[in-house]
Image (tube, rainbow, N blue to C red; front, top):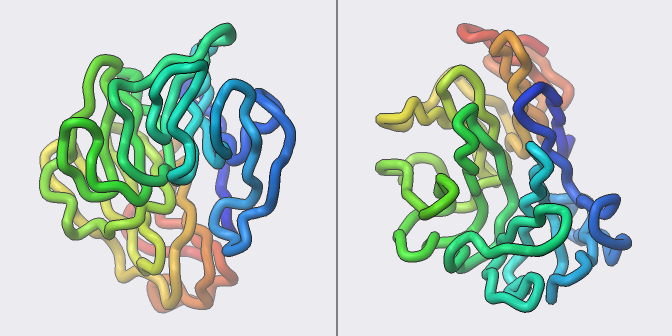
Length: 220
């Protein structure tokens, strides 16, 4: 399972975004992100986008450097008319986006700089500048999915069997994880967290590649 989608009043996360900008270009051969799309006005392929309040944030996989004629390394914002960079962007591929209730954009992927901050695959854009999220060394270097709910940011990393939580102060891991890899996560309106990927067990219970964490236990 590669994609989980929860739609609510705050966010709509779409992998591909071809319906907004252009036509499908190719399939990602490793299966991590599904489809790659050619974005109008961008000099590379778009793999992930986040849509909210009439704005569309798009990002690429390391070969995206220009959007609307401006330098925009791997991430840019489309307002319906023009592209805008997010400062100097990030120095590697972006594979996950989410937003909190204050419209801060959380970005995850395979990068070490969110200009000018040194980070480890995860950063937050507040509309004006980038910031890191504390000591994120326990999260994993290549972030696969992000979700936000009730003041907490949830993150999964490729080849990881657990989920990390940022409470605004520090990172922690919860639950006993899964026997396999978590590739994508989503949180519903009441706070249940769903994990999808390649695994047969979650918290010691049989699970066919998807499970729900209710705050204390995993359920298939």
